[in-house]
Length: 397
Image 1 (cartoon, rainbow, N blue to C red):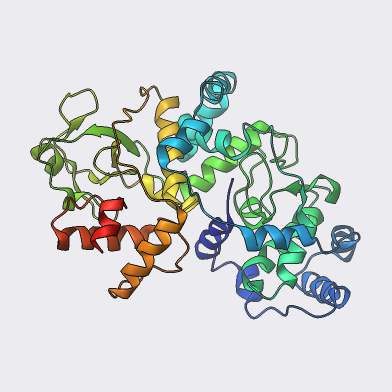
Image 2 (image 1 turned 120 degrees about the vertical axis):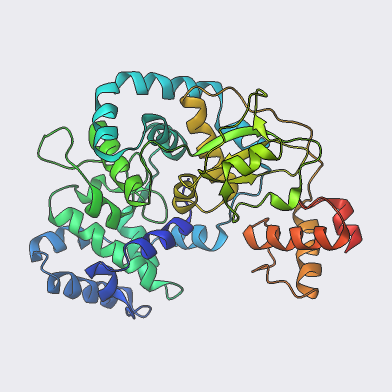
């Protein structure tokens, strides 16, 4: 489920680690066999054993399918209601709740150590691999070697290639076991090798950190990783709310947090109509499909979901899934206005660029920069500034 965006987050979070620091300016391209010899020398130079490095690299080869996936990768283009409806289904909810009961004692220990609730960990576990059922079938060492050799982003992938070699050298995994996502993620919550090394925990005490099959190791490691991303113990992450008819939509922006009491004063209530807490907990209003669709309060802990994967559609689905596992009812879908298709979104982005906005790549994707530009144009045009691209807005531009 992860994209290369998560790799960028990991690079930022672990930027001070020795492997990443040493990989800056890494050589790439040229003869692949010569490249692998350079990787071997570097790994041994970092203190890994010759035997371990040779075990890891013995059968490494280029995988053209990895490069195809890398070049074709995209972010989530489905509307949020469509995507969450597919991902947060009855079976996944039921299976998640069953696993929360099955591993209740492990989850209690994880929360005691990290502050991360069972529902939050389970939401990632379910979405990433369907609780370990779908781990991915790309050879991890081949994938990371291929991406490191490719000269598009060697500094991004080479640290994780070194991490994957270290996993073999330390005896955590055998090369034949290392199969996962095309970008090198491994295990039941799709951890990158550097994260595996940094946060991997032998929670079941069997002497081996195994995130492929040992569920206690998976849960504790994931909890520690989420804690590292900034999780605040005992604080909320996401809550569905109801907006009043006269809500000022220019106050609905994920990047703009204000005390929850401010929204209560504006007439925002919980989804069932009961009052919001009038406290100073920072919060943002999130409208994934504009003013006619669902509305949420996102709290600082929701930023962890965005760091895990900075697609709002994915992050909001994972956060919402966590609330459902914690007992929240199904979302009120509302009646959102139809959005734009991919070609129309590109037209909208082109018109926004012509007006001086930086929307990033004109790709037909509703990303954060495009949403921000839409809101500014809606304000200029006297439209409700909900950040949702509509045919009316496209025509007005």
